[in-house]
Image 1 (cartoon, one colour):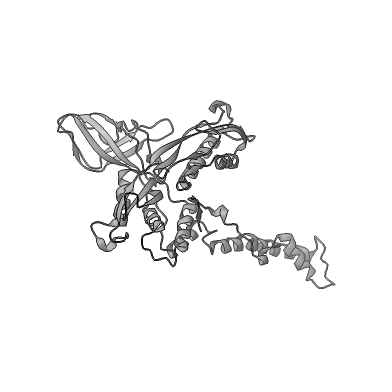
Image 2: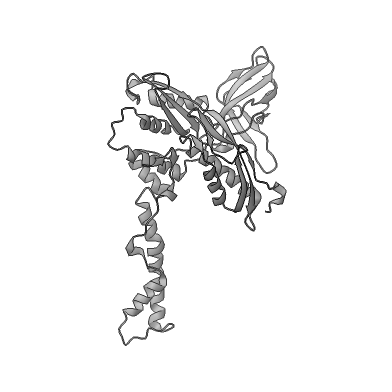
Length: 392
């Protein structure tokens, strides 16, 4: 199995065992064997001609066996491969690494009624110091209505999490200014932006394909989860069979950043599984009724008192810890519980953390349980360290 209790396994869960023939292949061991194989009447002392002439060969052979050959062996198996070699394993399993995704949202424009805003018109989050502006393009042409307001669907110009911006931050026009526009804002945060799928995420999907070999693909829970994860914008999916009676299935979906999926993602999952406009592409069995929905957010505040390693920069440690906890919530979506001990383990394994104390989740030193309709999202992360006293 590739998961236990809904928790995904990573490469760290597949220990790599070095083949016996690659052991004891360091430079000194190789060179010692070379010297032992010299004729008895040849001087093998260090600094002699035979010793000096054979040492470079031992160095080259050690590099070949200790690094290059080991990497070749790792690349042969998806459990240990990475990068392009993992992509090759994915292709053999019928999968493709998910590309980066551009965030989407809606901007509200106020201005002169009748003002036309063309498709592709750019709005943006303003630049802030060294942080460049974040542009968003209008997905359709819109005309400001008689009430002086227009709602415009937009998509980030650049793919990735950079496009996931907070509410009321897209407040300027980045294209040539239209005189009929007085103000711009996004009343809700944009969402759905994601980076290129990481190796461990792709490895999990490859393992799921191999684990399902020999099954009938008749529409069981694992099938619906796999189908949902095939959509490039989906980060995790929980399947609820017979959620509204016989023949009904609900798939609860979050995006690749660990937040509830927006309507664009929900529609994409439904289209992929049901394909209402082309039944020959339908994946779900005949007679099944599918509902794709976003979960209710369960905010989990994490507080503790951190002790940093010597020389650790607080800002970097804080951001790494935040990302590690959010990634854990994404992988544990089907477990139904945020485990107190697992959060502690994540904290102590974060680079730059020396120790911690007084860990609490939502104010208590206990697990946090949640239902299939909920999804844990990190709220406040308190470390007991002020940003200006954390070094670096």
